[in-house]
Amino acid sequence: MHKKSLVFLFVSLLEILPHASAQSLKDTPYVPSEDNLQARKKFQDDKFGIFIHWGIYSMVGHGEWYMNNQNIQRDEYAKLAQGFFPSKFDAAAWVSAIKASGAKYITITSRHHDGFSMFGTKQSPYNIVDGTPFGRDIIGELAEECRKQGITLNLYYSHLDWYRDDFPVGGTGRNLGRPTDRQNWNSYYTFMNNQLTELLTNYGPIGAIWFDGIWDKRGFDWQLEEQYELIHSLQPSCLVGNNHHVTPYRGEDFQMFERDLPGENTAGYSAGQDISILPLETCQTMNGSWGYNIEDRNYKSAKTLIQLLVRAAGKNANLLLNIGPQPNGELPQMALRRLEEIGNWMDAYGETIHGTRGGDVAPHSWGVSTRKGNRLFIHILEYEDSRLFLPMEAKVLKATKFIDGTPVQFSQDKEGVTLKLPEIPKGIDYIVELSLK
Image 1 (cartoon, rainbow, N blue to C red):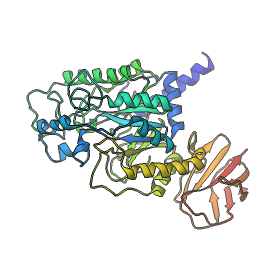
Image 2: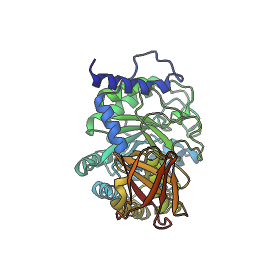
Image 3: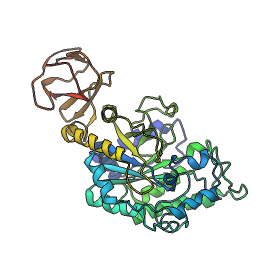
Image 4: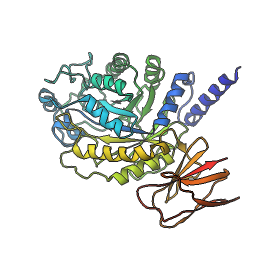
């Protein structure tokens, strides 16, 4: 066997092992293709993406869970589609603003839990092309613009559906007026797979399918393996991830963490998942909401968001930062301002984020490290001293301030490296670059 084949097999086996305790490997093990492995590498290199939660729920201005939380009857809720006309939607403006922020990919809701499809599907008339006066294919326009501007397009897809008769009712959507005698898993599963086939056939290369919703019906056989195989057969390089809040299942290509960095559980969603060896991603909101919330002006500061991006990179993870577009199709002004502020910082410091991996120095309260080749970037985020000890083994040849190349004094022994900074660190991120042997 060639060396390349051995490496390929080794990587594949490593990805299977973490799941062996969770489910038996009764079928042929998932072996990602070479294209898929390269897509994983690109995904990790990208480091920063923008999440878009948008649907007819934006018209109400109370987030994407409004239908369920307020027990809105599904037939009344569906009438929102008849008035949905986002006249100011401009795919080029969206993608340009997102690209300028330093983000490398977009993940948008193609269908959320309310069951409304934001693309021209032939599986149901309940979609933006056939069911609204707008009549335009949002996913199609974004896909075309992303290709023009060199941005990867990923698609969120909900396993959960509060609208369709055939969806087997789980823990949510119980009081929305759906009939209880028409549940049919085989019908619903076929519907989903037909839609996924459309998404992966009609819109060019898709970077990832971002699943959500199986937490609604624990212990149910969602037939994920077959669905994942379908996706990989249609586009082998398309990554599969699932926001199920447990350790990844076989067939998944990246692992996501909702509202927390890997290894943390402040939001309460990550208690059931260990950190796998797959590429990692954390998703977080700019304010407190995913879908557009007219009352939510509590936007996180640019400093907070940039430091979140840096801390994610230091934990070898991507940041997927959410925006909820307005019902008229525009991104909120405050969101655009944050994109611009992040972009200004990335223009100066993006080299220490893009294409890096978590560095030699583990995350500390003061900050993190990222590494690219023999360059180690020390990101000092919160620290009030001019001396900083770094527990690390690699031999340091030179230390400089990243922004201007000013030399930084250091000493090294068998325990690690001590930096003697020229001043007490200030600002969003004080970065020292170490050149390693």
